[in-house]
Length: 331
Image (cartoon, rainbow, N blue to C red; front, side, top):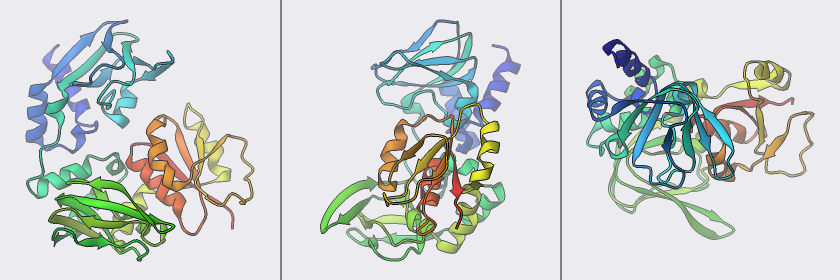
């Protein structure tokens, strides 16, 4: 590969997750550890059900991803700009076959793991590596990190109590926390989070009470952002709205038809006059359900005006790397 072509592909990688959030020094080290592969049509890059020890990034050409039902899903460089690596699974869930000549950047999966958080740069890098920040203007990002404030909390301390009003958005700098939800008197642990993870956004977006209790499992350093700063710098640029009348315009902008997702929990709501299929997915199930979503379509989220759970759903989808809009319903 010529030096000019290699430089062009390195520039391309810099715009893809997770490279877009790396410092120049770390990106340089990653490029030294990896290699550019030129593969021919019909080449099997990796096989379904094998261990995923290498991370692959498509720079030119097209791959066909073949699932266990022998269904093909095309993976193009445009897909890679949104998703990053071809397959993130620890065990390959699909086989990848070159549909034509392709150029791939390959690196040992372990070499791509983010460094263990040791200071301010690490938690910033972890936060910026989420697809959500594709929507956030650079000026907002600069203001964002100026307005975060540090908080030190000891072990077995409550940070958020279920039922309370939302006040802050949190990022874990060091330590671990537990997320517990109580329903009908029964408390269930739904998640544990460690350094680099964030929590607390649902209540700020929806204006609903906190939906879980968050407790430290060990001493933690947290960075928190006030509700007003979160709304101004993160929520406003990430959540966009379309009316039902604007849906046709959205359709014309994309090759795949949009997918409507109704997160309303009240089964007695009046159906909407929408000719397209609508998936009903209550918000508590969305985090699990969206793992199987196709990254290419636009997602149009329907929800009640209060609480604003459609906004929460759109935020979560955009945070995970999908393109989602909230459908503005008539009063």
